[in-house]
Length: 189
Image (cartoon, rainbow, N blue to C red; front, side):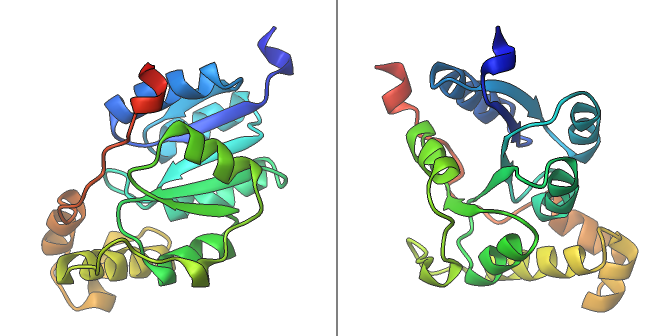
């Protein structure tokens, strides 16, 4: 019976977020699949062709941006929303260039995600961060952009950034502190 439901792929390395958002999106009429990294995303794309995808910018050891071309290759008509705890115009523009249709700042609830999936594409130039980015967040955004330009190659990224590879790996494993939860108030009522 789920063949007639629109297929949604949720990609995030936060297991709690995935569980809560998947349940909320099923209640809203989606057939939901979840992945927590690029490898699990690839396995799902071999078996399913999602109509929609919600991708977190910051995955454990990779950028969600690197998955966007692969998602669009799997289904060129796929509507993609990028979620991030770090609002940056540069990242939003890059996401749109790579195929994202919309861009949401966390925390975002299920209704906001559905609206972003089904509404007109976002205009990245209209993105307004809720608070100015810290130096750590700006550095994180810059590292993610360079990592994307280097096709996920950590050694090449470290060379471009002029830092030791291990230092870069430590920075990638510990993102700057930011509110990254998801509001579920509307789901529990």
